[in-house]
Length: 206
Image 1 (cartoon, rainbow, N blue to C red):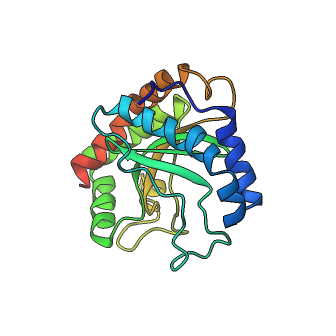
Image 2 (cartoon, rainbow, N blue to C red):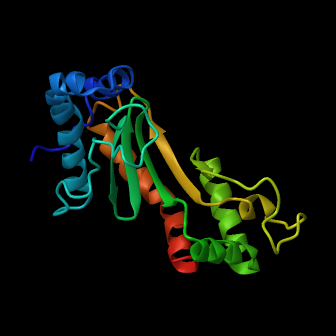
C-alpha cells in the first residue's frame, strides 16, 4: 500500500467522462484509470485514516439496476464510510461529511424529540451555527414544507424540526490541493470539525 498523496486529476476527469459514457464498453476500456486514479488512492486514504481498515467498505462502482432509476450501469462516484464519516469522490471533487441519511421512523422521532428538548435542541443550534460560520455545509436531503405533526409552526427550532435528516460536510474541488499530500491534512481537519454533529447524533439519536 503506497502512502496517500491525494487524487490525481485523472480521477475527477474519469467521473466527468463516465457521466457522458456510462456504458460497459467505455468503462472496461478505462477501468485501469478507475483502479489507479480513484480506487487505489481511496484505499490509501482509508488506511491512513484508520490503520487496519484497508479497502473494506469502499462502494462498488457497479450500480444495482434492479433498484435504480438511473440510466447507466455505473455510479458516478466512489465512496466509503470510516469512523462515522462519509467520504465520496466524484467529478465535483472529494466530499467529507457526517450525519444521518433517511432514518427509520423511530430514529426520526428521536431526532425531532432531541431538537424539541431545550438542552439538546439548543446544543444542536449552537453547533450548526458554528459549523456554518466555519464554512461547512449543514443541510438535509429532504425537508417538510410545514411543521411535523405534534409541533407548532412557531417552534423556535422549526427549521431543524422540518428536516428529515441532517448532514454536515465540506467539498474539496478539483485543483492543486485535491491532487497533493496537503489534502490529507484538510480531510483530517474537516473530520475533527464536523465531529460534534456526529457526537450529538450518537448521544441523542443513536
